[in-house]
Length: 434
Image 1 (cartoon, rainbow, N blue to C red):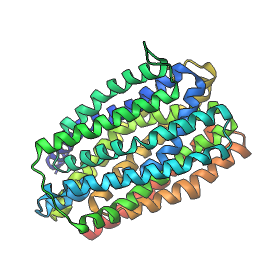
Image 2: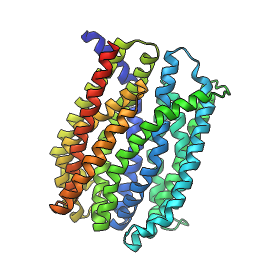
Image 3: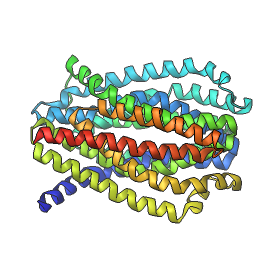
Image 4: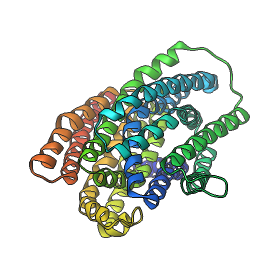
């Protein structure tokens, strides 16, 4: 029995390790934005914090749907289907979602003035929105092709490309934000331009690689699009519910003071860095669970699920210890503003406990994607973040005057509730499989 779990862990790690490197690279692109913005000015950091908070809520709808491509195609592969023919449908679907997201972003720009941000921040946010609207095609293309390759368990090159783009993004950030030679200093707009260039580079880089690596076929299958919507839409809505739950805090607290929006961005970035490891494990588990679900190997499916959960919890326990031991040092990596550090450090201790349950919930989400049962993820997130977390956070922040840390207490409560609901439902599914 123990030998079987060791084999499962080895198989998950072989698939997950390159994804971990790529996910860390992807989040480090965001970290680079935060660090460069913080070095430029607190206003720049506050503005991109507000902009990315709102943009993520829009972009995650498409990314959430596309992130189910690997799980669905792994199920098909387990059933013995030739999944090479699903390349062009995946690309077309990503371009359609990119167009839809771009239109939504452009429509949202006039609304920014009515939210109540300081005028100097509102102008920067609108400019950042406008440029990002044209970057969605590259970002969605990259996501779709990366997920397509992941279904074949081809993960090394896509994630090496992501790591390379960390340095490319940092270089472009410095050039465009602070200026160099004939390039003027552009501040936050420079960050948006750098992101646009990097997203298209990543998208077309993977597109060319895929066309060279796999003999793709032209194929039309409307059942595939139905599966993407059926499995992907609840998963996408679950991610969007969670992202809105996190990012609405930046918007609400940003109206109180820009420093709170900047602090929340730093805390979310710190959390995201450690979150990338269980996220990679979750991606690997969804592929393995998807394949074993398609091939009806249910005993092996359960072993992969339990192994993935255990691996995520072990890593997040170590991460929580590191965060708890060095909170001030970690926060100071993002900003030299002493007042901003003072706001962040007390909340890091709450973040330590939050991370444990966050690692568990993302593992459970990956298992449900592999099983093609994602409605429970959406329902549990809706209950936890909007019925529990946000109202509780508002009471703690404004009625008890806890401000930002009050919202983080609410997020901690929501993570426990999400894990409880999904764990009970998974236990029920496993009983049926037995």
